Image 1 (cartoon, helix red, strand yellow):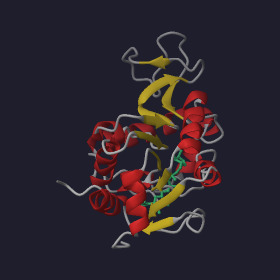
Image 2 (cartoon, rainbow, N blue to C red):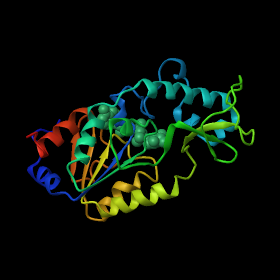
Image 3 (cartoon, rainbow, N blue to C red):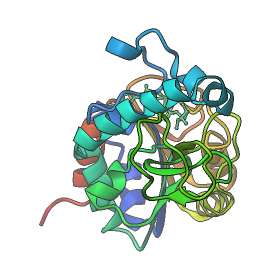
Image 4 (cartoon, helix red, strand yellow):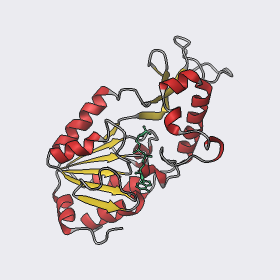
Length: 248
Ligand code: APR
């Protein structure tokens, strides 16, 4: 970890009026939720997540894709928010305006207690109809995998954004607006590769925000931010928040 943190960064955090944060799979890694670009283990080792998370894959083999998400849903249900998620809850309470933009579908930010969350890629715990997009809370118990929509009989799928699909319009608009009006922008635990989320840090830089990346590995963004903090979110974030806002 890069200790001590630069004084200018600590002062900027203390004086911030609006902090926007973009998170990716890396922030949930320490909760035991696998990231997208690391090799899968066990049952799913032979599959590339990027080839399962598409409408084409679902059309080709809906049972396989449904079961992969059922497995991920189970992992997420068992996972607990980690110190990285909790540090963001603490940070939200310290600044006048805070926007948490996440690419994660695991709902761990919400379970940690974050308030202003924009879910860019949906939520794995929700289910919708593949045919008409309608959200569905329950469906008749049958042995069908995937189960069927109680309204139209179409196949059900998770309410997440797959590769090649559009992001929810309002969520993206709000995320872009926050990115362009915040004074500090964090990119945490994301490979900064998948568009359009990957363009948000660039928009923040263009709008003049102070930019900070937290990631144990370099990404395409690392050389462009003001502060690249090398380390895991679960260790860097709590230390950074404690340095800027020491407990009384
Ligand atoms: N703390 C911080 N960052 C971490 C940690 C950690 N403990 N562990 C791993 N990372 C970093 C990795 O170095 C990597 O840069 O998290 C990043 C995870 O990258 P991805 O798996 O590509 O996840 P993400 O950027 O969220 O992917 C974006 O792509 O697959 C789609 O829709 C999916 O939302 C996902 C999107």
